[in-house]
Amino acid sequence: MKPVLVVDFGAQYAQLIARRVREANVYSEIVHHNITASEVAAKNPAAIILSGGPSSVYEENSPQLDPAILKLGIPVLGICYGFQVLAQALGGRVDKTGKREYGATQLNLNSSGVLLGNQPMQQICWMSHGDQVMVAPEGFDVLASTDTTPVAAFESKAQQIYGVQWHPEVKHSEQGQNVLTNFLYQGAGIEPTWNSGNVIAEQIEKIRAQVGDARVICGLSGGVDSAVAAALVHKAVGDQLTAVFVDHGLLRKGEREQVERDYVAATGIRLITVDAEEKFLSALAGVADPETKRKIIGREFIRTFEEAERKLIAEAAADSRPIKFLVQGTLYPDVVESGGGATAGIKSHHNVGGLPEDLQFELVEPLRTLFKDEVRAIGAELGLPHEIVQRQPFPGPGLGIRIVGEVTKQRLELLREADAIVREELSAAGKDLEIWQCPVVLLADVRSVGVQGDGRSYGHPIVLRPVSSEDAMTADWSRLSYDLLAKISNRITNEVADVNRVVLDITSKPPGTIEWE
Image (cartoon, rainbow, N blue to C red; front, side, top):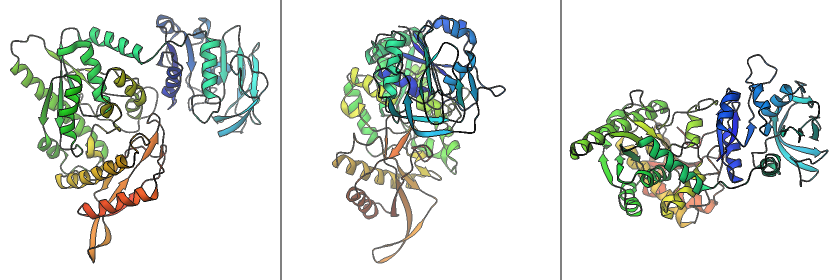
């Protein structure tokens, strides 16, 4: 299947473009902006989309496109910075005029053309730029403008090259998806035939080619990511896979029992549970820095798997197949936040930036280029039960990064009880599918004065972080009812010892991340 290549010029949302392409049932891949024309030709893409980025095209050392790519005869769409790259490369003019556009902007269409066909002549689009295309390349039709930007969109049907200054990939652009589908279907002539079934078939083929007849272990956390990754690998290699569930003592209440009961029943995968609470808590003792905690947890995960490998080899001495691979449920947002691709690092994820350098396994990461909702669709296609597929995201480092401060057994028990109350009340209120997730955070090194039992208390605050999101790249805080929040607060302060205050985090992402650490 010919991919649509999304050329990443350093945009945080390059993967969002790829996601929108997939929503149009067209397969997409992300490549770095330094890709050469010969490398593009080798991939034989159906089309190319140039992403936005933070640079100015006229600056020295700004990321550029190999000009020979535009001579391959492949349909191209430029977005924001990518639009300006096209304009400059094809003989147009890009200037810094001192006029900037950020956020919702009224767009005025001069002509519909291919790209803006069947769209209103005035619409709201989402801008984020300080430079303007002042003159379109020769032979290009100018399709749209704004009060500030004279050339906001152009196209050459003859050359199959198109561009827009705004961001059609974000939901705030009213006709954004129509822009993309017009390019894909009419501009590039692509048939919308890609779906989750294609992903499964492709990944099964890749897994079999990578693994061969070797044995594989999977770090099963109980979350949807590792559950789907394990199910996908199991479908590919069968009993070559053994799932290892590490109880690191950082789990939520009832989590171990749910994994051992529900997941095994649903998949038939061989599961080994390792009780490693003492090992993890010992390694985390005295550590408060969040990055250090993440790296310790990532390191101890791998060391635990290596110990499990040795035990498995000892148990099955007659089996000559070596255990060479480790399956992880890494998703693209993990990669982006850990500094993958052309973007800046935000925080290390235990399964990306937190892995030790002397890792003894080769990684199998079949979900690495996917978003959460795509993973859920694949899980449903694989026949995983609703309770697993629709489970709210939970970080691999567990409650260890929901305690702001040192992680101790006592603090974990306190947070575990508060978290259980929140999950129970959200479920009772029918909010499980309405919100993306609700991290419950213990501010362990903060205490506040309260009144409990007619006396003074000096307890910890608990933070509620209910968020709504589509893909975890951006998020907004969920507007839960006051009655529900009051019920949760009352239960926590009444039932959880040493907690006398519950607060609500109403920060979006950005600027805040979903997790506190």
